[in-house]
Amino acid sequence: MIIEYAEKVLKGGEITRNEAIELINVPDQDTMLLLAMADRIRQRFNGDEVDVCAIVNARSGRCPENCKFCAQSVHHNTGVQEYPLLSADELVSAAKKAKDAGAVRFSIVTSGRGQSKADDFENILEALRKIREEVGIEVCTSLGILTLEQALELKAAGVTRYHANIETAPSHFPDVCSTHTYEDKMSTIQAAKDAGIRVCSGGILGLNETPEQRVEMAFELKRLQIDSVPLNLLNQIPGTPFADNKSLTALEILRAFAVFRFILPRALIRTAGGREVNLRDLQALALNGGMNGIMVGGYLTTGGRRPEDDKVMLEDLGRPATKAQI
Image 1 (cartoon, rainbow, N blue to C red):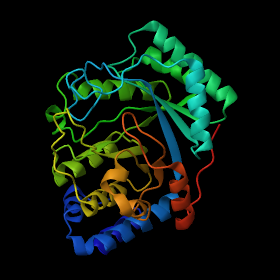
Image 2 (cartoon, one colour; image 1 turned 60 degrees about the vertical axis):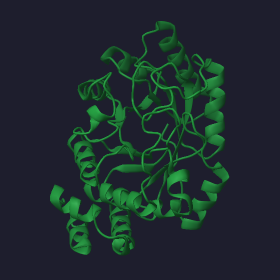
Image 3 (cartoon, rainbow, N blue to C red; image 1 turned 135 degrees about the vertical axis):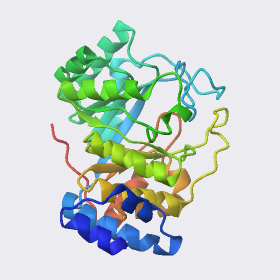
């Protein structure tokens, strides 16, 4: 069944939702075969290059949203560090560090519902222009709910992608956040598309969703024609409602990654936050199981693995990093 469905995709076909559910539920002893077939699909449609990106937490904490996984929400007592928007010079410095760490793509991420403070948005635009001029790295942003007017200004400042995770399956979203709706996510994604910005959208595994809802999320991203998909893994933060969530097993995670590749054969699918905690010594299997992107360095409120270790991992796998398209 695994080989049959892989051959269908390799020949340019598509698997059905029911077939994807079969794949994500294969037993542990069949997982390595599933990963091998997912990697053949990755090789066929994407080659061997790995897209390496990094982010900066440009404004931390005091977020009015109540996402149950997030340490930055005012609804949760997590003790997270809080600070206002970093200066343009600080953001340029962070971009330079990201490039030195091997990243070809750098994203400015801010906590909060959106960019209601005009000064903050103007300062972000200034930083984006300086990064493009001084650093030589692709720039992306993740700034919350976005209007079309803001999206057009980001496009003019050189933003190549806008990041807006759908977080989870549409059927599970109300169990994750109630202060904004799934439709708010859709309006932001549409605004970015209308401005001519490519969208980066994925989510987090481990939010109490079922394997079938992971498949639902992948098919939703396919419906939205998303071609850049970051897959994060829940890092249980004390003080959040999901602090006591049961951790997914490494093989369960790898099966989900592989099935995303079966469903989205041509997408850039990136292993991102939480991989060090959840995959541990099996991190390389994500890249040998269908992934063609990786986030390096720290994340928003948690540290990551040393970039030097990730460079060695890519070298050992024989996987070159992409070059910045600027």
